[in-house]
Image (cartoon, rainbow over all chains, first blue to last red; front, top):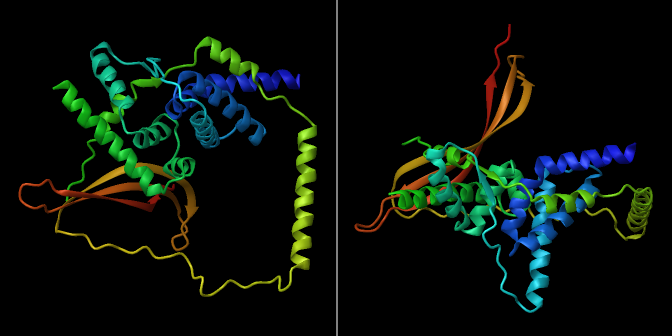
Length: 164
Length: 153
């Protein structure tokens, strides 16, 4: 019974949170396959360390560390041309008249400087506080807040240019 | 002074984007990777903890002059040097980035409950620029803990 309850808990947690963890893993790695490997490894590791459902901040921090480790290992090997292709990172959920704007926004997100994008992802879709974002990325809290602002500003400027 | 937040529109648009769900194949793989419970690991952890505590006690006892007061010359946290801004500030914009509810506490003087909230701001300060060049912008991070009175009956 215990085993079943644990499986249910694990499954429920995955359904609830896997999307946002996958988004971050994709942004931290060079290709979809790496993202999936890092995601699996990080989810299992975080769960074990927490002895059950881990805090989101712990999972994001683990994903980041594992992605860095993987990046170093990949650098040592022969460098292949890796890319995430056109895998959709988001699903668009709004009225049809906003559809075009949202697709522009998604493109703009892909072209954000990585430092801004990771803060935006953790804060906006990850649901972390600035304290947690700063701890996850090992940056000062003020830097996290400033990068979030810069990300919004960059997106607004890009959208203004794209839609005019 | 201008207190505007033009970021709301972008944030509202971002709410229309939801992180894509993992594909069925990946979800199946993740489900199958469920960490198994094991009684061995907690026991090993306990033994490691006991060993670490024992080692720490031995070190404290054996080290000469084990009680070291802090080096007064080491000092506390370094004061960050404030670089005086170049130019004249001409405009500032305050952006409210986050509001966190810290909970309800009892006010010592009035004995009334108050809710504490922590606000996080990024203040943008624009400095007067040379003719023909854009104004220089500086962002400063600021946090405030504010008491909010609660209505009591």
